[in-house]
Image 1 (cartoon, rainbow, N blue to C red):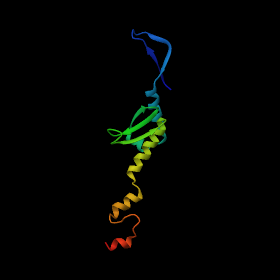
Image 2 (cartoon, rainbow, N blue to C red):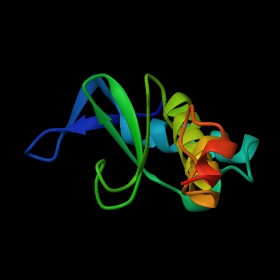
Image 3 (cartoon, rainbow, N blue to C red):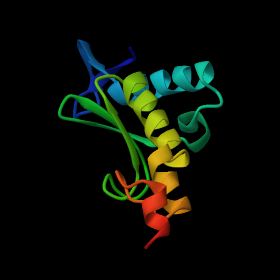
Image 4 (cartoon, rainbow, N blue to C red):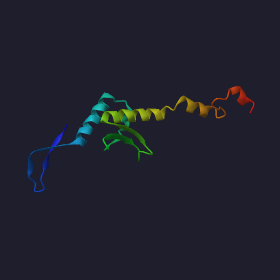
Length: 117
């Protein structure tokens, strides 16, 4: 983890007081994840990273409601969750595709019964 030395208002450096630089550490963890997973959606799209209420949030888009989001207890977990959400959006479920391909098809109704409609 990176640390920086806290400077007093008068310009003097505090002795022995090291403050962790969480932003730099998170950026390093992101870069490691991108190096290990170079073709992942997070490595290609580079989502923004936030820390809220003990959770890391990877966000691509204007807001959580409108964008693609991954949430996890670590930076890597949030990026993995982001990758999963991104890929899920690209590959809709088979059931959703079937409904689009055959709008007359209703769950639980045999296809032969629909032909008589």
